[in-house]
Length: 63
Image (cartoon, rainbow, N blue to C red):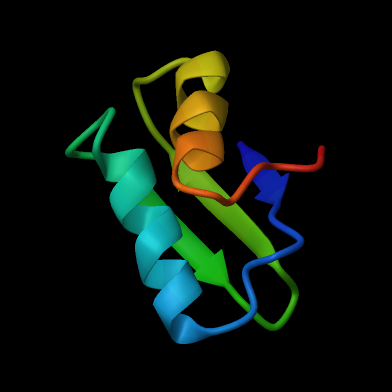
C-alpha cells in the first residue's frame, strides 16, 4: 500500500513512521520518503491497523 503522510518532513519523522508500522507488523517493509511525504508499505497487517498505528504516532495518513 502507498500512503501520503503530510506531516512527515524529515528523516526523524520517517523513522517514527517506520517504527509505528513495525509495531503492528515487525516484518513490515517500509519505504518512507520525507521529500514526497509518501510511504510504501509491504505488510501482513490490514490497512486499518496501519492507519491506526500511524495516527497514534502522530502521523495520520491523508489518503
